[in-house]
Length: 194
Image (cartoon, rainbow, N blue to C red):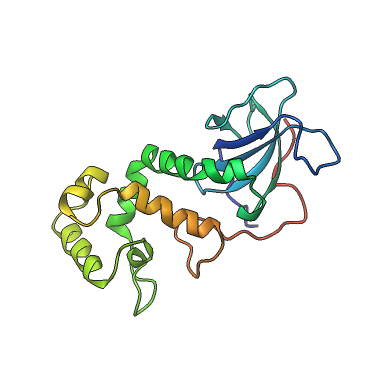
């Protein structure tokens, strides 16, 4: 049986101590984004726990210290305005903290089909720029973001480039998904209470 991979850690995008304004229950809610798969989730903090925007919290299965329950995976459209404004910084932070994983994307990305390459899905990369990246990575693998920027002149900030792509994927308007999984509503909750 297939088991969906779950997030282990997340960054808090918004915390509503009395819940959403339109909710009938006054239950504290945190909107978070997972570090591994950029999953947008709503979580219930443990009673008496203080959580702040930008905080990294453990949401895995074992002994959560601040999160009691993962209520659900949510689409971008259900994020609060505060969460939406926190999202770009959180994305860039996650990408920078997992630099090897994302610099390896520049090394390992391949074609999507006979006409399109996955690197072309990053903002600012067209056919001409794609060829420059492929030539450079054949000469020597990219070691990190600084290496990419120094060898590929049109890429000034690889983390922000990837962040913009992830944001577009989270908004749900893309044909291909490189870094996220498209949102699909699920009948039951994402996790269980701790």
